[in-house]
Length: 364
Image: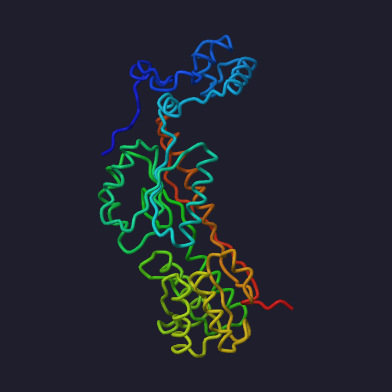
């Protein structure tokens, strides 16, 4: 169990946190600012902490002198005085994939906006996560964002370990669990939207190229495809689906396999845009007309997808928003913790968006 990195009022006031004894003697200190402004050190401290008990004229004068003297307060000092480190821990994996890198971009942008720094840990597996939490605890992070995709049983540690972690934690890309705070895109809904779009075009033989089915997202997308077809009165079979690994190469192999096992196929929902791009390329090389002979829709909305020929219809999942919302929720959890307030753990589900382009609807 982690011990909170809070400092008592007595301990805090006994620390000379506004000066750095080993710092350059010529460096401007809070005392220099106070002397030039004609105020006490405590008043400068109140200005730094955005306290309301400072007159507007005094606040403006102190801030102006800080700029003139190039005064930069110690981040360590401020974190002690506010009982916050202003650091988040971020655990992530698979940065070679587009999705995790987009999520991380959303996390970093929002964290910077809110004044937080990040400590990043990329892990390959979740066989032993306790050292990860111990490392973040030793660095006194205010909270942890677990952005590792749910793959296989890599969330099995939640049952035993999570109750022992005395630090706010929020998860990304995972199925619903009680007493767990998470942000996730509705992959199931996105897959249904893609498949229903193909059905609405009159397509009746709709195949699917999934991502690796040990991934929760891939299973959700396959399930959405299946349920949409069943609702439309069709009978999806295993030979109508092939599994890839998110890469373009696996998409090429999977579409060849589908052409062999499902020769009547007139449309295909592909689990991500990278694999869908290969499916388009193979279909065109076989002389098929897109979308008349074969309609193709992906999932992700990569920037390149709009510039393919034909341009690729897809499902837009806003992973940058997902990362940003995780940071926002984490900041709220931390503030509630500091104020000894309870905060209800409510999941945040992001609705995906259908993007229609030439691979399903030819421009006239």
